Amino acid sequence: GISPLSPKKRLDYRFLLIGSLLPDLIDKPIGGILLYQTFQNGRIFAHTLCFTIFLALLGAYVYRRWKKSWFLILSFGSAIHLILDGMWLDLHTLLWPIYGWSFPKFDTLNFFAWLPEMFHILATEPIVYISELIGFAILAWATVRLIQTKKIHTFIANGLAE
Image (cartoon, rainbow, N blue to C red; front, side):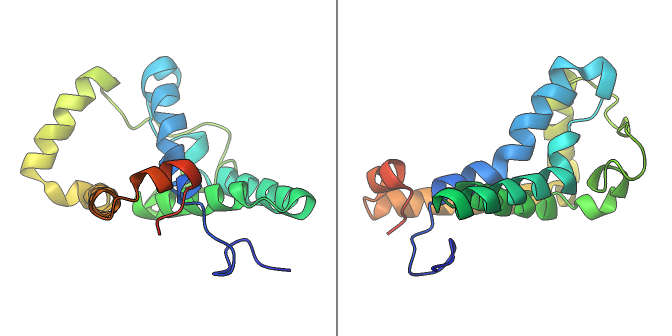
């Protein structure tokens, strides 16, 4: 059969985009806002290898059963996110639950106090956010290209960039 990521089968970039944002879409609201008193960390469950492997296994099952590659693409996007976040520097989170069931408490500020601090660090120590800036630059470039080539509607409708 054709691999879900084969050039013969079109890659749905919408799922890659969602997957690359998924760890933050899940963890920032939970660990940084909703359950801040418990976690004090915006990098919890979805920033683990366990989460990405779960998506990949679910993706393998869905692909074998229904020939849909959505979850495989989500898992790939999630893995890219972990790389760009440099999660190998925080093995306690990346390899959760090997080091225990809790997560490190890194954030000393809640989300609303953290946001201005983030802009201050961005202005004074931009290297801290270099991976975030790379991700933003890729998204901005892709968006501009879709608009320039008048393919934005095609992308929204079926996830294709060409």
